[in-house]
Image 1 (cartoon, rainbow, N blue to C red):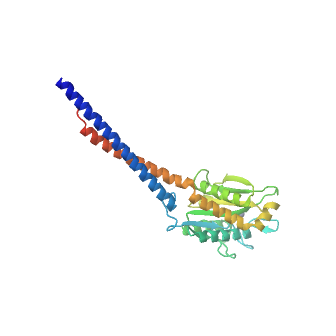
Image 2: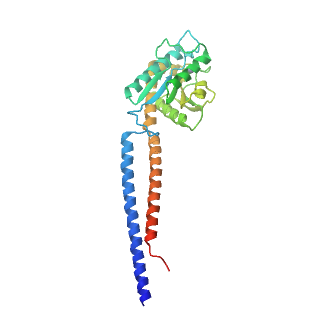
Length: 283
Ligand SMILES: [Zn+2]
């Protein structure tokens, strides 16, 4: 009889402890959930990027390579429909730089700050000078501006080249492509893998090469001549989109959730151990 009473007492105490255990776990989960929500809100409102970087105090450094040299020098661009690639890329680069500078979250370096700027002494050294310029500037991103040309003048549209597919350069390039397509309404030729392009191969930071339409195509050329600002605007929109995107934020949130989960697990294990120690020993 006494034994049964003790057993009842013990199982009652065990049930109370288990109940307490569950209440504590529920409170903990609630506290962690509230803390997570609060911190995610703070992260979202501060616009922190993937590297935990605050763009207000630590701007993104962007090197804009305007592709070619001015005539009559070496490393000239394509020409067609009365237009010169190097002149268009020079203008678009300058417009893009202005948009980025006005934003305040970016710092910019142009390969040709002046129309008369000439890089290198031949084609190879000219390309090397652009890669070196970006490294000296300690750029976070390298954008090379070009305009396509082809013997078949029906070829048209915008394409973006990166050395590899699926990496940071690719993600960045894809947003720039979408930005340009939205701003200009020109045809998309998509993302292209071009690991052998000199600047993409040798840049030491994420790098993209933009082919902003075909100078050999009448419609593209006319559009480039009339609306160079829309290319600059589209690229700018793509850059901003890249840093404000849910992709970047989701990386932050994912890392944060992993960290919170790990902390929760540790707390639960510690709590579990304390409770197990307090539990009445079985027969
Ligand atoms: Zn070119």
